[in-house]
Length: 306
Length: 262
Image (tube, rainbow over all chains, first blue to last red; front, top):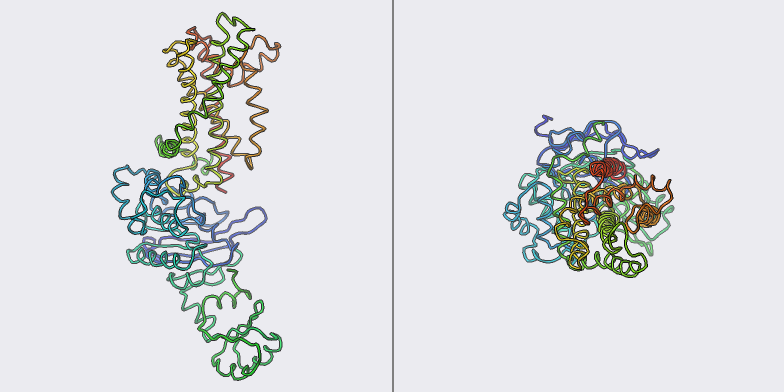
């Protein structure tokens, strides 16, 4: 890829804290205008990667480039064009919504007049027009996240770095954030988001990188990853003797995984499997299309914790 | 200075102002309570000790004890307000409130933040020290212009103690450790540095050691200003205070880098 079309480039990046290897030989590139996901369970190194690209953690080995600036050496120059939505809200709780934007804009050297000029459109974007003079401590979780998003946009960044943007939100609030992010992508922004929600990754990301224990275990478009690693229907079976069931359906399954008390059966023709399960008391069978959850299970042998 | 340490130094001469203004905006919301809370303690000490002990002590260094004590209380209140602002409020912004983390995702550096916090804490010292001075002037124990003469030293004292407290919070795992700094460092300093009685009362070896302490330099500048006398070796005291303000700034910024930006 040509440098000017690349927003983020990680090349052979390693990071350890003490004896613990957090990120192991990681390379990936994010094109401008793309939504790129870092998908992995807690402890996979996602937040460390997000902090490294802001220059807040230095890699032990490897090269990082963000918006054509080498990081961490010129991270400050890069951050001028980056907006950050951190994993944990760090808004000013004692300030009003508008005061939060005012204070944050000043950190980018913006004048009060300039901030007041852009604030209404940011509040409208975050659907907080009616809350401008409300204290942050009085906002709901979803509103706080949306304010954090509006705050991240105050410097009109080209790149947004979002660390678990919808963790802890109810489904309605989550869908509203997703919808807002799609608007930003339509405006040509680049988004890097970390998540452990498969649905979030599948819905938003053009491409993603699946991480486990600091290692990249897969990379690509969500559909392509699902096709490549699963490529057939899925039956979730629970409520019976898993060992016995496995023996029964093995001849008809392309692949079987067991996680907890659920058996995941991947089969070209799920009807064949269902025929053999019919009439078994207490057995629950759910047929569904494959998703990234299955990819993760296939690659790691375990489910991603929720 | 290596490249990574240089990257956390203040990026320019004015970035810190945004941090100062953030703190000022937060303070404005609770200004009245904050002023009353900061003044009650030193004023109680001033009049309680001044009148009570003053009767027994009589004249000290050619002035009434309460006038002698007023200058000490101005220095002590400058010390404590900068110290407490840094220990408790700045620590909360660095730790639990994640305010610093938010700022670090902008174009500000760690050095910009620390500098903004130091100047803010010093501003609170100026407010507290000046307020005591105003009380002393109103009651006739010092002259009004002398408050102006003392103000630069009050500000410098604030910077010094904010800077020292920065080192403490850059190392302390939690609030629980601050009490050691208060009881083992600050409280002895009040008695060793001539704030409440002349250092000439101390045993000789103590006098020499005490003369090196930052609060002693502050008292040696503020008291002559408030009693309208010439200060001996003023340049030495100012120089020493500058060293006490600047060295901990660099040390704490390096320690914060290790703590916050691994």
